[in-house]
Amino acid sequence: KNQVEQSPQSLIILEGKNCTLQCNYTVSPFSNLRWYKQDTGRGPVSLTIMTFSENTKSNGRYTATLDADTKQSSLHITASQLSDSASYICVVQYSSASKIIFGSGTRLSIRP
Amino acid sequence: GAVVSQHPSRVICKSGTSVKIECRSLDFQATTMFWYRQFPKQSLMLMATSNEGSKATYEQGVEKDKFLINHASLTLSTLTVTSAHPEDSSFYICSASSSGYGGERTGNTIYFGEGSWLTVV
Image 1 (cartoon, rainbow over the protein chains, first blue to last red):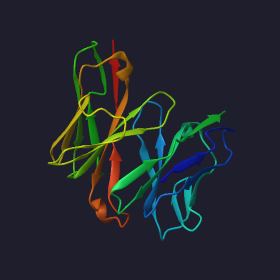
Image 2: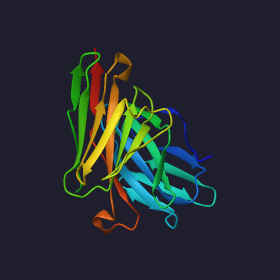
Image 3: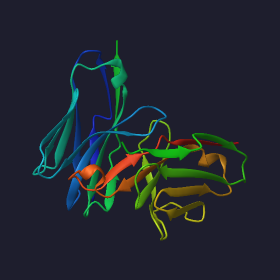
Image 4: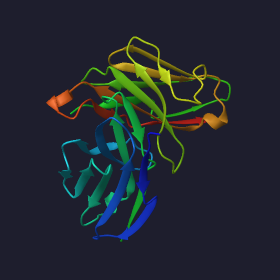
């Protein structure tokens, strides 16, 4: 069964600290993996997109990694800011990008 | 960059009436558009995949007669919630997929709209 699982479900950290969010998937054939940030009541915004051959991609303080062999991805946030409080969603496209599965997301709260 | 626009951003309607939500790709042609609903503090749930010029593909459990999707052009898809009930109140989001927009090698790029809050009273 094609699935995308994210952990933790929620996370609270202090401002300035780093954190890592996890995404495991079991889809095939894999096309690409995306991380999105969704603020409450807003549409998701793309952070990174990685294909099979890419194992790391950075976007400012956000760094995503991908291990296609173990089918795991992580999103590392460095020096967190209050504005990083949001849900982070892992999305996997497969079957030549014609199908898409969303993870359930990780709700991140940054406390001052 | 590419932008996907949704309208209205918020709508309140009476129970039993129908409401239409529009999703437009503003500067690219979207061969495929996706419609999702999201309840508070929950993940996006894919409702249907809309392909220009053909019938939408609905996910299991989504009533096609309840949620009418029309993708009449490469820049516009509409979701009509028919005979709305309070339990249909939710956050509805669309996304549009382009083909190789910006020359990226990562396949079809997906852009999300800002979402539409529907409240049925």
